[in-house]
Image 1 (cartoon, helix red, strand yellow):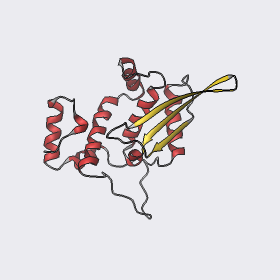
Image 2: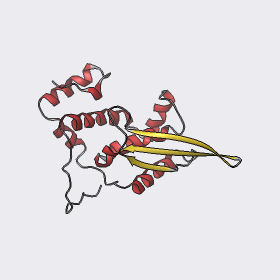
Image 3: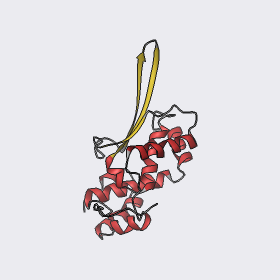
Image 4: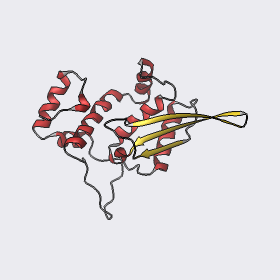
Length: 179
């Protein structure tokens, strides 16, 4: 049985059934039933617009975002799913602050729910820097199914690690169905 490294720390009552699903070779089936298609947010501009829309809906008074991008340098296994960076610079006699969000490029072809969960997580860092109770409360405010999506995202990462891409790679002629 392969190690389920993305599910470490979860209780056996949750990981036991997943181990059985993986052993039976049904992980793809389970994920595709729940998340039948990837999102269509492929460009940095579309990702920025998606993120700003969520920010404006839930965090209107938070600082503006300077940049939102897919980043191929983020290593999902060792680093993070996404990153929120805050940069302060003195420019002339003024202090300028920039907030940037970077999402791992592996999520360009993930289900929309997973992308939204990651964006919500990074947006929550605009208000709460630490992963504390207030932080997760804010995540749940923006995405009520946050914890379930986080668990399912870990299943998706397990799938990528053990099996490969969940969705067929589209050729130049293939178009993704709308969401």
